[in-house]
Image: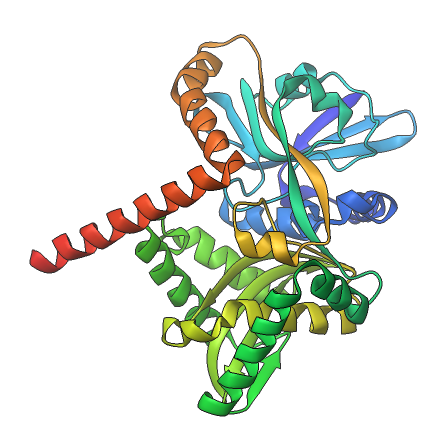
Length: 359
């Protein structure tokens, strides 16, 4: 197996066709986070973005997109923003994982949303979980019927709130693919406020993430959907789409309309519009939210772990990161712990806000 490491923008047209061919032939690889479009976009804004191209006697056998950080610490391309990671190649591709790291000049490669079916990395899994999916392959009507069977009260409540929203705020409309960049800026402002309100790190405080979202939206890989009442935007969602698969990414809403559950209304409207547009699957990202458990009607397995070579950088990385990973995994695996952690973060955010007001 030969391994050549290049920057994303050095990929040739034949390589891009091969990459898309792998995605087309293996359903789990069709996720937009594994697309060349996403890797190329991240490469525009991240200096450490690279792609290892694996070749054998028959030509290109796989692609390994990643980011290299200080001390040779490696992470998946767009790490921290992605819900699907791994090698773009047949699941049973055989290769030496540590030889791959040597070629990539990595002492460590850590992952948290790796496709669990990729057998070469199986010895390095610390744990596996499932990622929820909205399966629209049978059309929206079939999906909606399954949703009603799983949770008839929830569907009834969402539909009631949508009608109530229409009566009290004006006609409800939905745009599946909104092109106006001003609406993207509105979404990012809502999302930043949500991050601060809930005590999370504000992703959009990072200029490169803002630029990445804007670029993906402008080039069509990013699909911005907007729910309106009487023409006024009240919720929005930026997802990624390649082919027939969408990946949920950044949902947010105007808190003035929170009592109507605009996020849930928007998700159902999105599923309906996506199915009409030819989307057969919406990957919603790792669990931890009750609404995803209700919306899902499918799932696939992901893994968290790390591959390391003997080096000082790998040792330092383990000492710093292992306790945090164990704590995060424990919280995500237990709904009661997740709810408690969520309350603590929100309380912290409120206290931080009061302290800022006093200052």
